[in-house]
Amino acid sequence: MVVFSSSTPSHGATDYFINKSIELTFDRALDTTTITSNVISLVDIASGSVVPSSASVSPTDNKTIILLPSTSLKENAEFRVLIIGSDMGLGYNLKGADGSTLTSTTIVEFSTGDTVYQIDSTLEKQTSNLTLEGELFLPTNVKALGYDFTVDKIRPKNNKAGLDVTLT
Image 1 (tube, one colour):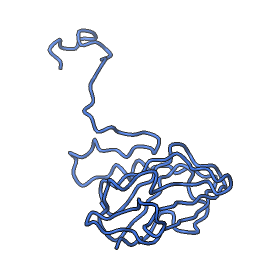
Image 2 (image 1 turned 60 degrees about the vertical axis):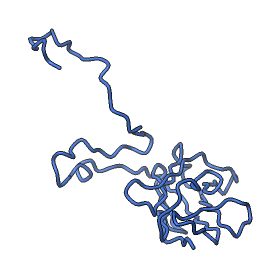
Image 3 (image 1 turned 120 degrees about the vertical axis):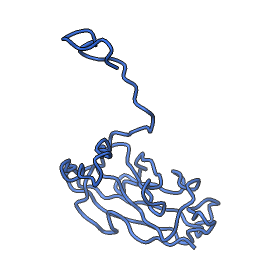
Image 4 (image 1 turned 180 degrees about the horizontal axis):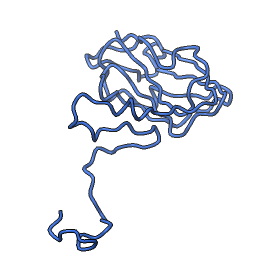
């Protein structure tokens, strides 16, 4: 049986950042195929509408789901995260990697404030190994696709400004 452990923001939290992702933690590793928009949804309580968002397992912890809204949440509004369990009888629900199921539907309600989460770049860039210096934390509205980057254009050109033409 999969058991809900905690969330950020916690149930009943107030003044949550309008641009920060939501983290849902469970007691065991999760089956990534069951993490879909049918199973996990973010709802604006006042309007009753589903907020477009994407859900995925955290790259650092396979027990945690990261729910990322497509846009910033409304200021000073109430939201509900709904995680479908088998008690709803819908034929789909959250499952663990071991095949166990979330038996009780889980609801997390919180309200936003009017503040924006800002990354402290000095703190976040500190690493124990200098070879990891290229690993940066991106804002929530920027996604790294995981592909190698290709240089399309170089300014100044290699043969300008006294640069060696063999520069690669």
